[in-house]
Amino acid sequence: MTPIDYIERAESVTPLVREYADLAEQQRYLPRPIAEAFANLGLYRIAAPLDCHGADTDPLTQMRVIEIVSEADGSAGWNLMIGIETFGLVAPALVSCPELIADPLTIMASSTAAVGRAERCDSGWNVSGQWQFVSGIHNAQVFGATVKLYENGEPVDDRFYYAVVEEGHYEIIDTWNVSGLRGSGSHDVRIDNVAVENNRIVEPMGGLRDRSAQLRLPLGNRLAFNKVAVGLGIARAAIDAFVELATTKTPRFNSRSLRDRPSAQLAVAKAEARLRGARAAVFDQVEKNWTLAVAGDPLPERDRALVHVLCSDAALAIAEVVDIVANASGTTANQVGHPLERLARDARVIRQHATVAPQNMEDAGRVLLGLEPTGIMLRI
Image (cartoon, rainbow, N blue to C red; front, side):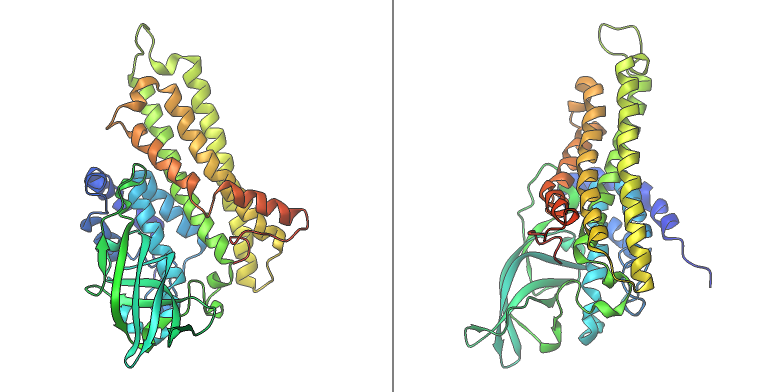
């Protein structure tokens, strides 16, 4: 059987992503034709194990697929990235309810942004709560909600679990009114006292680590490098948009095109250097860690920490790159509807995300100096 080229598949869907990008921005969630295309191409499941109808692709392939789609539209790339993480990190735990994702076209969403309550009842568990940042929920048929288990009002244990609920048993709450990544559809989900069977309370994100080499990678690392992949696509799109602008725009009170100005030439050179350097560093370290995971070798704390150093720096680089070319573009970059205006808003969201925020670099620095990390990202 000829191996499937998922990078080629990602490239094939970018015209559709671009076609619907404005609608996604307007309605504040991913249009269904894009979500269905991702599902039909198997892109949501490239990180899922084979027995979850997944492809179990390596992290570098995952990052490249996300990067390609994000270059076409950051919100679509973010939505795909979250779907890939959900199937890669949550789906492996659905060993007790595989029927929920047996259809390869089923889309799953999840959230760890809040912890709901699951109270023991005769039929299983009564689940209630409200979860934030549920990217892709408008196109999902299954939702995984982080919960703690209670019996007779007392916690069963100190662990978190996922309560897996089908469409029709949860409510989407319209809360995603933002500027950056506006089309990602990261709205809230509410569940009010819904009965969930015992077999649909499953292990938390990243559980069952023996199921694949991917699950042996630190959870914090996996959550970081895929966020960066979205940003890398956004930054590449920003440079390309600047180059196109520079070849056509003649600044006011000037007879030369923008590309003839030394400031523009320096800007594009700086942007390319910063983006390519940050990208290469992340890909190189992720590849090293992946090689160790495949071999079953222990991952040194230093290599684990370096992923967070490089991902946090890359998130900063992404914002810097967009700022560099936007500043060199003049007032054009401020005009609503110009690609650089949206890309600047989207890039800021990447830099602000908890998985690649600056404090992770500081915590990783502790590890590089032989100290224990204090933040959660380097401990999971």
